[in-house]
Image 1 (cartoon, rainbow, N blue to C red):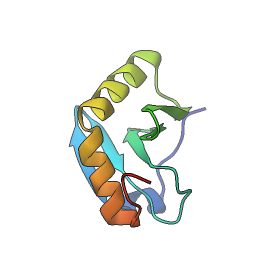
Image 2: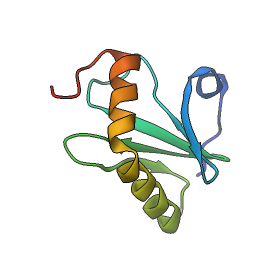
Image 3: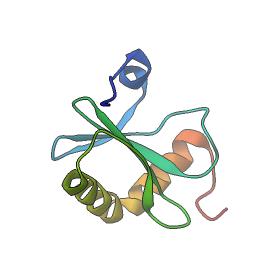
Image 4: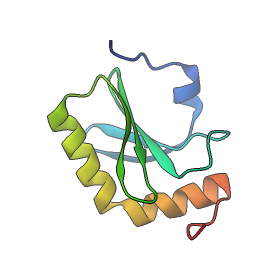
Length: 93
């Protein structure tokens, strides 16, 4: 089943757009660093610590997940810094 974007997703700040993917960090979620990725009606959650790995996938094909993981790896330090600024969590916790 494919996810549907809602008002909460649209209200959250966008940290990056690349190759049709939108990368967002939500407030008031768990402490483990992660980023949400959206495209059309799909969503994935990617852990940024301790390693970059898929946490959840709602609708993306495997080849899209592979692209997402590669983009997150390429931008991991930037995403961690953005997460730290947005959530207030230190990168080295």
